Structure formats: structure tokens, C-alpha cells
Length: 136
Image (cartoon, rainbow, N blue to C red):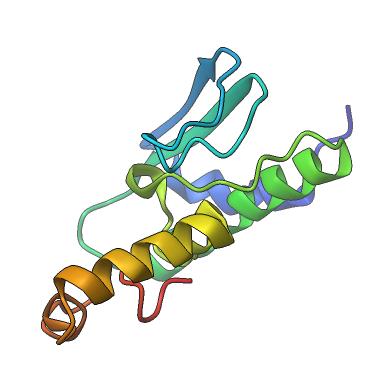
């Protein structure tokens, strides 16, 4: 296998690198579990990185994380194995997590928000995070 030159992006971030793969058996869609969109066996891949804590490399580290994330997604898509779902805990910060939940689930969340929070308090007062107003 030929080495991808982008791997050099990680040369300065070798203080820690962990790739976590979680395998899930075949799941069935359920109305009780709105995020169970797929009826196939799943493997989720999460990456964890560490770099010096002085913050001087934050932008470069984020670029490296985004690059490997996009590379893995592109490879999975090319192989026909991409399940377009992003897990909040493993979000890179630049990903549209809620958008990966599917149109039906987004609609359901918007309906629930309209019913229980018609003034949009939780959308307006919360600064950042996974909000329906800007993460779809």
C-alpha cells in the first residue's frame, strides 16, 4: 500500500494517537430509537489525538483531524460502505452531526422543539453545540 503524503500532517502530533473502532451487529429501525437509521452491521471509527497543550498547534492539529476524517469518509464512500452518520462524542467540531441523523429524524426533532419549546429558548440561549438552528 502506498503511503499517503497527507500522513505527514501527523508528524508533529505523535504525543498520542488512538483509533477506536466499534462494531455493532445488525440493527433494525425502531420508532422508539429515532437514530437507528440503518439496518446493516456497523463499524464506527473514532480518532483521538493529543498534542502539546500550549495551544500553538491547535489550528494545524484541527486541520490534520479534519483531513483524516474526510479521507476515511471518502474511502468508505468509494468502497460503498459509508453509513453517513456522525456520533456527537466523536465529532471534530466542524461536522454537521445533526444533519447525519436523516431528514425524518430532523423533522421529528423540529416538531418536538416546536411543541415543547415554542419560544426557541433552548436554541437561542445556548451558545454553540449541536443545535437545530445551525447544525443541520
